[in-house]
Structure formats: C-alpha cells, structure tokens
Image (cartoon, rainbow, N blue to C red):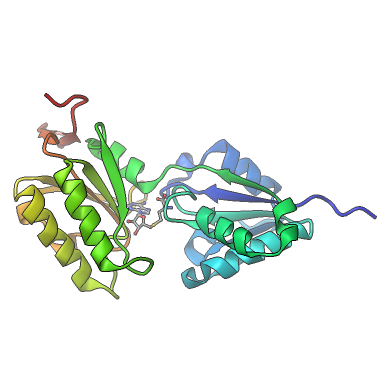
Length: 252
Ligand code: SAH
C-alpha cells in the first residue's frame, strides 16, 4: 500500500479581514486535513468535516512546527497558520528551524510558504503611504533577542533616516520596554517626527491615530497595534475626511 503524499503549507491569514486572505491560502485551507497554529489564528478557520484543528499556545512554536512536519511525513495535508505573512516574525522560520534540527525524513516533505498581507502593509495602506520610501521593520519583543540589540537597531535606523515599522510594541509582561523605545526615538528623531499607531487594522476594532513623537504615549500601543514612525520626510495632508500620512518617493 502506498501512503498518500503529505504536505505542509505555512500560510498567512492577513491582518484580520477575510477579504484580505489570498485565494491561494483559501485553496490550501480547503484541501487541508489538519490546521495547526496559535489559538486565535486557528479560530479564524471555519471547521468542516474531515478537517482537524490543532490550536496551541503561542509559546510552543517549535513543538507546533515539529508536529506539522511529522503529520505531513505521515501523509497528512497540513496548513500551519500565522496572522499577516508567515515569513514576518511568525511560523515559517520556526518550521525551518525545526526542519534543520529534526530527523532526516522530514526533508522529503513538500513544504510551501504561502504569503499573506503583513500588518505593516495593511496599517500603511489604511493611513496613506508612510512606507513609500526606504524603511525597515523591527520586532520590539525582547523575548527572542537582548534589549541592547533592539536599542542599537533603533538608533542606527533613526540615524539612517529610515521610516520604521514596529511589530509587538508592547505587552503586559514588558510595560517599560516601549517607554524606552519612545525615549530613544525622541533623542534620535526629535519631538516633531510623525508616528502612526494603527490598532487591529481591518477588524471592527480598528483604530488609527497620528501624533508627533513628542505627544506619543506608551498607552497608545498594545499587542494588537502596529507602530510606524516616519522618516524626516514623512508628512500629513489634512482633509475634512481625515488626514493622509505619506512619505514622498524622492528625497531632495
Ligand atoms: N506575522 C504577522 C506578525 C506577527 S507579530 C504579520 O505579518 O502581520 C504580531 C504583531 O503584529 C502584533 O503585536 C502587532 O504589532 C502586529 N499586528 C498583527 N495584526 C495586526 C493588525 N490587524 N493590526 C495592527 N497590528 C497588527
């Protein structure tokens, strides 16, 4: 008897709105036998006959990745779900770390990464085009790297005049970290630099706020917020229907 060929698709569910899930990801979910991921992301997948959902806690990324590879090696069709894009501070790297360290037979598994709309791009689109010129993305969580490295990257990115997109700006476990981030940014970029706080983009709880750095407060961000700090060129266009935040295409 031959075993059906299994596969792993590491898929991005986008920022929240179903309309922002790609057809490629929807097709993979339609063909899946198993869905693996962090509890709130698996909750976004509609249950159906023949589909087993495996929600798990966020702290067990590598176990989750190993579970996906082992199920696929046994012939299951597995979708590992992340929010946004799976390659941006999410499960794709975790699956490849597990693959690199794992048993040789996992390397025969068909593994695909299916992109999604990452929070930074969804937030940027809602506000206008703050990432229209050169920019960088930094994960502010210090779970996976030392604070000193975060601070070094903030200072150098500010000096290089990049716009900056921050993921995981603030959590209950690290309330003081984001205050230090704002202090460093004010020191390097000055009080007038524009900041976008974009919360729960593309969901019913969406909230956008644009303030100068001098007025930015830690309680404007939580773990569902994307923070985008403009470059020195980033500006607003004021309109009755709400401001547009954008960075021009060229620097004079
Ligand atoms: N892979 C995801 C990012 C995971 S890190 C992606 O590509 O989007 C989780 C962080 O992403 C959150 O702390 C928050 O900063 C940001 N985020 C995710 N979804 C968001 C949304 N709908 N609105 C604003 N920020 C979001």
